Image (cartoon, rainbow, N blue to C red; front, side, top):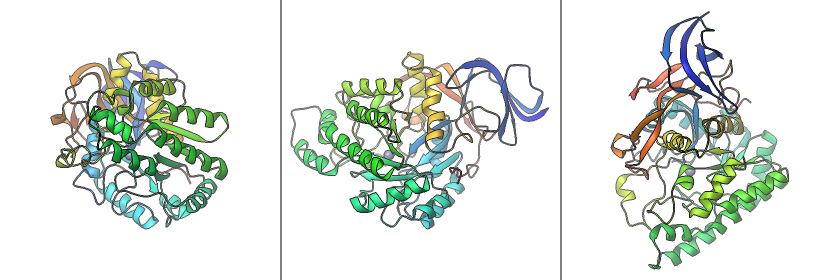
Length: 442
Ligand SMILES: [Zn+2]
């Protein structure tokens, strides 16, 4: 058989196992993933000796700020950063300008992203009073997002009645609803108190200003809606042990809920440094609780919540600066470093950052696996490569990074999207406009 591309001599990694094997690609699809020397010729052969071949890593929570906030990022700069970071597919959030709440706006955003993106993308729609659930589903929306509590864009959740009605419609349409789970009344009250305190390190004050109960109340509310509407829900960026426990209990009751957490909640500590992000980075008890929940499958997936801002905005006094950390390019290296430290296996990483997001967001088996027929998306990694994360080498428009100067072992060395190298050996080899909108099957 003659193929377009063969990846030879690498170690293939699935959630279940790692094994030496070759991968053959034709017309952008995997045709075979198997034992060495079982394959024939190809136009292009890549020698992956000493490297691991992962199914394309998905970052299912990014803010590329396009349209409307493109001084912070756009689909071109964001997708280039993603390609260098070993990401083959991103799912972008709807808190742009205008918010992605109608099919018309969705189509316009998809057009902009298609024009600029180097990698594949999926787009969330905003669940708002004006949202036409079926129309947005037909337009190709990945899922819906609700902001319980405010974040960038200060987008309020619809009122309780509208939210209930819209979630019932989502249940009927089979569309999952993702929640930014915070409680505005709690946050505004404690923020005004914390702004006046100077008895505590600022990192901890940021956490105290949006306490755990803010997240817990919001998750309880989301779960209650899920229970009574029978909509599938997802809790984005869980920050606390208590939040993870609620998800565990709900899963036990048969509520269709999935959970996500992010590198900053797993790696940073509110008592060391100031990293302003909503919801906030917390202390070690919660960090350990989240690792435990990941290990036990309570938290289903990880994503970066890449949330760029302009440098001068982040340099404002801490209570005035916008919340958000960059992460799409450092996501894979940070977790490969944790694999090298023994905190999780490479198989776990593939489950949490490829298979699980593809399954939860309805893109499996097109994405998230190494099976014949799937899109030929691969993240090829070198687990021995050591380097420093340095802001000056990152490709986001935003020059903020919580991990600047950190020595990391394990980096992506190639990013392949539908059979085509988009990044190879530290060089951008893809093209603007190559990425396509990926949607759940109707
Ligand atoms: Zn976000």
